[in-house]
Image (cartoon, rainbow, N blue to C red; front, side, top):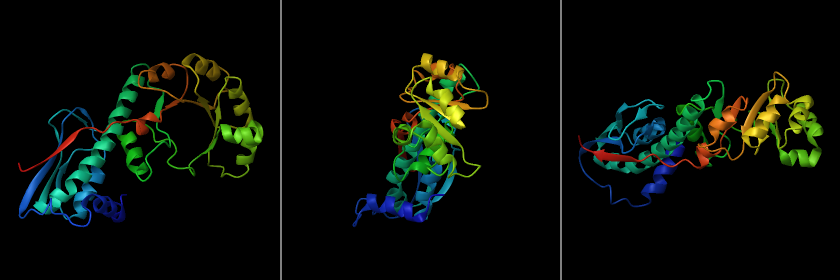
Amino acid sequence: MIHDSTVESWLREDVGHHDVTNDVPGETTGRLVATEAGVVAGTDAATRVFEYLDVDVTETLDDGTRVETGDVVLRVAGAARDVLRGERVAVNVAGHASGVATRTRRAVDAVRAVTDDVRVAATRKTTPGLRGIEKRAVVAGGGDTHRLDLSHMVMVKDNHVEELGLEAAVAHFRERVSFATKVEVEVETPGDAPRAADAGADVVLLDNMSPETTAEAVDLLPDGVLAEASGGITLDTVADYATTGVDVVSMGSLTHSAGSLDYSFRTGD
């Protein structure tokens, strides 16, 4: 849910203290048009922007819809002044979210070309203040959100292991979490993968390994422990990692390197 205070801050940032540019009388209609092919996301946020300004949103495409150049994603009707005030914020947020969804769909399509059994997941490498929008965009693109925040799962990372040691770090967090909370352990060598599993990891993250080394590490894990590949995985290499036997491939680039899908907002019919 996008709160009024969030939308208000977006609009205040764009409009400033004295808006002459959009001081246009009368009523109008408008439409958000895709100027390149991609996957739609962020329509809920764009809708909230217009609704906050008392502009009626009369039509939207569902998030996750594939669009081609010229397709209309959203239509509005209302006071011209308010339609124009909401235009840029709505275009920016929908374009950003759709860029994330489009990049995610490309990764998912690459994986589906080789297997149906591997999930493509995002990471916490999100833009502060926009995590909810970006994570929903990942879902719209067919991906998995992974952790939404630190409370959803314990991840024992290299810094924890450096401070406590692998086994001691896992035990430390096992004592502090609910029975319903999974513990994931990050390892950087195949030999540490079974150590993490034996220590009590539910998920072992195979970090910054080549596809060949990742496959070696997966072979060392016992049944029932999930394997996740992560670290520097790109759209060009994600299919290679999907063939290694892992259950999940996570990619920070789904959010931190996604370009904005190009949209144009046009008034009138």
